[in-house]
Image (cartoon, rainbow, N blue to C red; front, top):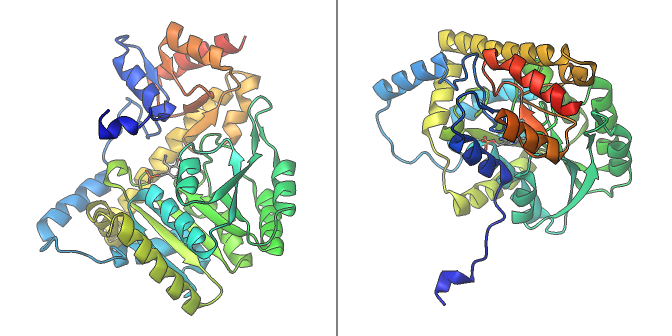
Length: 390
Ligand code: PMP
């Protein structure tokens, strides 16, 4: 046998397989609502105008591509602070670092937690973004799952969430979605956030907030409101942030990790560990995307154009949500959810039927990208889903 024959088969991410299947389907009217990227009314995932303009400026002005150091682009994380941290932006107990996307931030956050407490347990609500599980496991941490969402009843199992947190011992970690929950679209409302914050802070749990879709739900401040309540109440918070969706720079891998501890010195010391962990994994984050984001945020005209573009994306998401919600009482819940994803109360067999009979591609779980389809395809999508539910 050869050396690498020792490797077994990978349990591949079923979403990647779904994308491949959709691409291979020759039917011209196919609808791919599996992949998790923004699409506009004609089905494209365009480069934002503000980002394109910033890249031009970058090309004209950049003098060197020498190394930028372990923290990455510091001006970029500085400019993100008011957006991500809101009223906590000036808190010197919070320090940020530029990462390769939200994934890089999650890896760093969990590895930092494992460096501090190798036996920490992470409470993860199911369903969650599938990659959360391997990222937590790769950090060597234990996972404890609780049921977050009931797909058939189309609601958050809030009591279960609160009782799980309410019986967790001090020092346990809770993974929370900041907004636009992936894969369900089911966000906590303000009252629910307050209850979560109460139980997390009173029991001494460590929240890790994954905020990958800020601005695409209700608005920038609204989408981070729960995170800001947590920062009001908790001395120790880890934040994994992504600009990949709200700047549409997915492949450029743009994110950040923020850490709050009880003291500015404590956070500095912990961030030295974070830089060291990053050094082992990727040494330094890729510069290009974050540099473009920095230029957008630092240039008033580009910044207001970007704001408008995010507003357009958000409006399209919420318009299509409204259209689906109005089509059938059983789909009304979709109008009260946020972000790019919701989950249909369909069985795997029904999902497969949609694929075979209607060339509609969504995850086996019934998760679909609400803006994955062009405007002209929405009615056909709704008709096929209602037929599948009947
Ligand atoms: N968290 C969630 C909930 C996500 O959906 C994603 C991307 N699909 C990420 C993090 C990671 O984003 P990025 O592409 O920036 O690594």
